[in-house]
Amino acid sequence: MTHRTITKKFPCETQALWSIETGRMALRSETVSAPGTDEVCVRTRFSGVSPGTERLVLSGKVPESEWNRMRAPFQEGDFPFPVKYGYASVGEIIAGAPDRLGETVFVLHPHQSLYTVPADAAVPLPADVPAARGILAANMETALNGLWDGGASPGDHIAVVGGGIVGLLVAHLAAGIPGTRVTVIDTDPSREAPATSLGAGFATPDAAPEDQDLVYHASGHPDGLDTALSLAGTEARVVEMSWYGTAPVTATLGGAFHSRRLTLRSSQVGRIPPERQPRWTYRRRLEAALSLLREPALDALISPPVALTEAATRIPALLGPEGDGRMPLISYDTPAHTD
Image 1 (cartoon, helix red, strand yellow):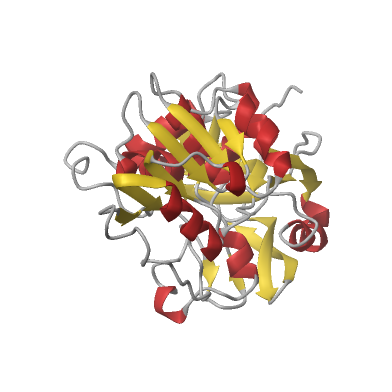
Image 2 (cartoon, rainbow, N blue to C red):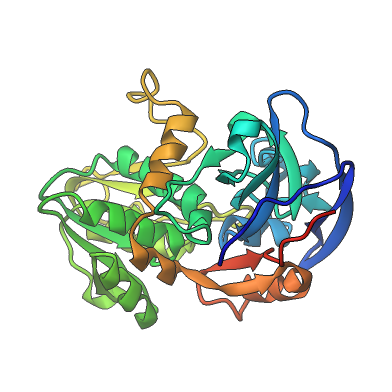
């Protein structure tokens, strides 16, 4: 599809998706101002809904102790409700810096059809990364940070417990390291197809390989952490990438945990690992994540598009029992017009 730049008159109206109470979302009209100096206005084409974090937000399960740390860039409202939340938006710059008009960009912005942000918040997509696939950038950033935290090396045998978005992205990155043997572990056999397409093996928990050099846990379920600990070899590292919100977690630290001298390491995208901080900025990390989205097989991680006009009713269902673990994709594309 060919897109042309839209000319907008400001101020203008936009539609934004809000979580208004447990399990309920609503579209709200808002006003967008003209971009000022060093700002751009972005017309959204697609945004992605995190099946992990945004499910917890919609469920009202963000702990009060984390309300400040969990704020997303450009979030409006406060936890628990109502809150405009999200951080995976891809669109086109339609106003602002003249040399950037028409540029396709990724922005850590909530679900909204049109918005004005600082120009440096709009990060260009590589020309060979489709706009819809660009919504995976924030999750790829999380996976990249997790790979750093784990210290994966050539030849390692690596298990990834949990075949959701983040787990599969971690497996994909790890499988690209020469000589590694990467296995995705999940109770759902349907996760085998995307795992193998991304270069990893697959096993159910009862057939998972043991004595692993490195284990990642990304299932979001406490039982998965026990599985991860059971697969780690002596002196191995287990990297915990799940976030549980208010849910209590009981890990089995008896058995062989101490005799194997295992290391349980947290990984969270909010911080760059200390050894990289002197050289890496958040901008550089996001640009690296975008560059890692060139693989067409990554499209298997994204659900069919949902129109923004239907998002308030359909997204809660996709984050619930109707969801299949893929990232819900909201489409904003409409025929180009001139105001």
